[in-house]
Image 1 (cartoon, rainbow, N blue to C red):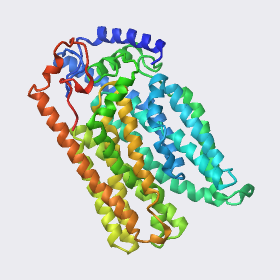
Image 2: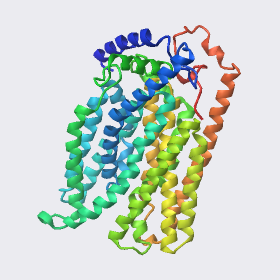
Image 3: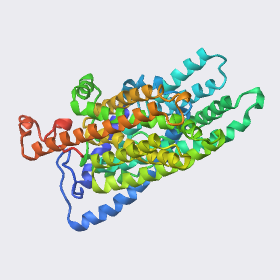
Image 4: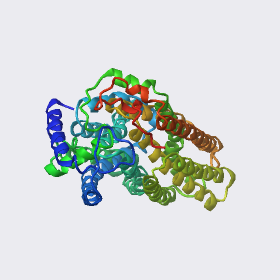
Length: 478
């Protein structure tokens, strides 16, 4: 954070300790620092206040972030994902060194300008160059927002919010199908092709929204103007009892290296890598897949809407269930298995109506799994710089799967697309195996800490000192 924000955070945190020390709520997970517990009546009062406070945070934070990601995914559906593996880790480092209010709208403005220019390029060299820079500009949004939400919400509250935010991806797919169908009718207007108008109009809309975003994206709780002093104190007290968001952690390359050296972080990365190929191939090629089943191009665009609508609804339902049960891995493995069934249907059936049902099952399994996979390191990695790096690594390594996926669906392979569907199904099976492995690793580590086998790490450590997720007081969400 900038120096002025650190000062504000220190002052606000002091107020939070004074206001809430007696009334800190009981935690499902071990606390980051010492906390006391109130009586039952105090707990009930604060539970009611916390619900109202969470509603206020959700209304102030999520719509704006979701809108930015919806625009990002709309643009991405028209762009091959090759360039998106670039610049991700540096983007989250820049976010840590600057602020969300500066960085997230700037990224949005940059990709809006590039997307608009895609509509006026005159040759393939210019098109590929612009497409590369569009991927670079978009690359920092998702890992940045995941880190940003971890600085506002408690650990057990983050997954549901990330899922709501990510549901914009499937919503963009539904909206994008209708939008593409409508804009296609502008073919010839101004002597421009319909595909040019898609880039121009989406790019201009993104530019307008990005300029407005400088005014409706907030930084962190310590300086957010929409919070009263009492609300700010309560937000900070809740965060102190759950994670490291209130700690004044300066950026250091040592903390970056902690993420790179942690095997669990690499498993989080593989968890998304094994989902990114089916995710991006489905979002990029769904109209083509449906068209090859025997539908017209216009019908194929419109038939993507039910597929994405079902995916959106199921993403939210699974997110609620995962939050209520505090279970992550079984839901990922279950929904990934549902997607595997969808691809089996696609590979084994040529009847259009049945194969179309396979696309619905594939999307209904892929999107809920991705939402949980992407929120998992935000829940489990402690240390702000380490967490920001882990989020960015996950997206970077994950998107390598998307690069491969863009080469798999060829027009000559339809309507069965054995190569593309086969790779997607294989990746989903690998996802079940990777997530199962990570689940076992996290459960084993929690058990060791429950038995006190890691307590030697606290020798010579002050009570208020925090060792990140290596601290034996930390428990991983599984």
